[in-house]
Length: 211
Image (cartoon, rainbow, N blue to C red; front, side, top):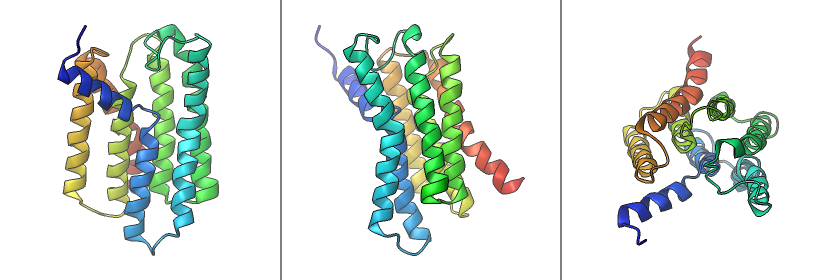
């Protein structure tokens, strides 16, 4: 059956913003923003931060998921079968937890970035628990976590970059629409994932900075 243009675009967007890719995008954006607030960062710092994020949050868990796909232990990368999600989510949560330690111990990044990473780990864990009974959107939670992280960065440095935040929200709407267009989730599942992502990465920073 021939796919329509909206279906093709929704698939492309879903692939580009696969949940395990989002932390790497976020780290690249944070490193760039951080370089504008502190003395210029050495290129090696940027490289280690971005590559390390990719290894812990994408390469390791995605490699395990691809191996399971090769062994036919899962049917697809979207993990559409609830019974197939448990092991991949466990691998991903462990990778995100290692990423948080990497940020804290090796990179020694500002607390806003550490709490964003910790919040993202907790969000992924909650998504894993919810997905045993209800298919909350991991794509929405991922982009929501990125938006919450951007808001946290702005809060930490007392910034008001309206254009950046508005662009992030516009991108979020595009991704949420793509998941609905793909018939992967109901509107409630998409919105719930998005709000969970924002709350999970923004509220810890809000509490830490204003407690």
